[in-house]
Image 1: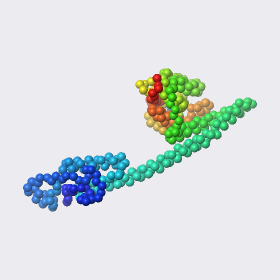
Image 2: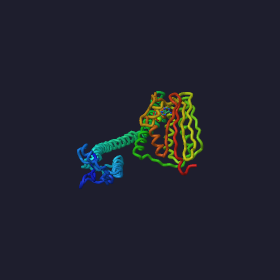
Image 3: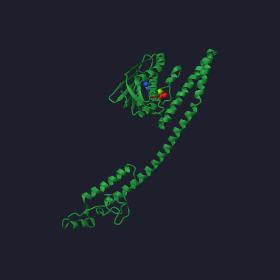
Image 4: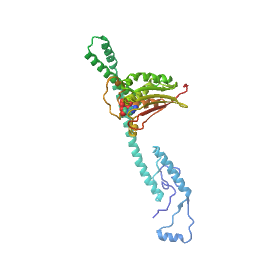
Length: 355
Ligand SMILES: Nc1ncnc2c1ncn2[C@@H]1O[C@H](COP(=O)(O)OP(=O)(O)O)[C@@H](O)[C@H]1O
Ligand SMILES: [Mg+2]
């Protein structure tokens, strides 16, 4: 049988496998056999009674094994348990364990190679987005200038003016898309410019409210600011970009008669900015998907007139999240459900120079 016959070391006497503390055997305490018992056992088992490992020995072996398991679960396969040549239960367990570790190592290596491949593809994708956005964006500046010149020339009849304004609107839309793509590429490449300075947040909010006031008026949506006079250390251009998207979304998803409120209040070491609307709202499932790229969870509807400023590519909230996290902050959305409005809140650390 040999089931209970421990060996001095797990790699056998004179074995060459690497030794791991606790896994290379230990003291073996022989039980004090009762006279006559040995014969009974020999008769029953067909062989002499085996020595049992001491409890300390078992604990030491298991501790050694635990160390190996810890290293392996951290992805370190440099010290695998040696293959024992013993025949006791623990040795056989170790053989099985070693096979398992070998399988795990192969799976780990395959996963590492797959991760490398994905990282390479991801890097290529970011480089492609960056290159495409630059190439698309470069001709936009002269096109816009020439359109402006054309608009100033005079002598255009009504139909020509309408055509021109359609072209201008679509060029603007293209410019916003290019800007979003560039932001995504920079965020993913961690090369977005981030120049935090003390900023009066109420002024930043007022500036963005101003941008959307006409659109909100046209739509019959009240757009109000409720911002305390707080100074916070942020990148004004980037935080402006976040506010712009949140307000644009709120206005876009709030029907006539509704209200969008932008509030701003201090916490102990943070600043809370919230854009709350009384609009179409979101289900819990939609909220969970919002901050992923390209996650437009409502119908787009027609893009007309100045509303081009409110439209995007489904990248806006993804970019907001990246910018807020770049500031060491957090952004989230709450909605009580469809038809019950939504609130987007961001919490930013106020920074050392804030008041
Ligand atoms: N205030 C809001 N109320 C309801 N849905 C919203 C609101 N803001 C954003 N959403 C949903 O989240 C989607 C993603 O928003 P965003 O990332 O800014 O992309 P985009 O504005 O280009 O659609 C929107 O298309 C819309 O479905
Ligand atoms: Mg948007």
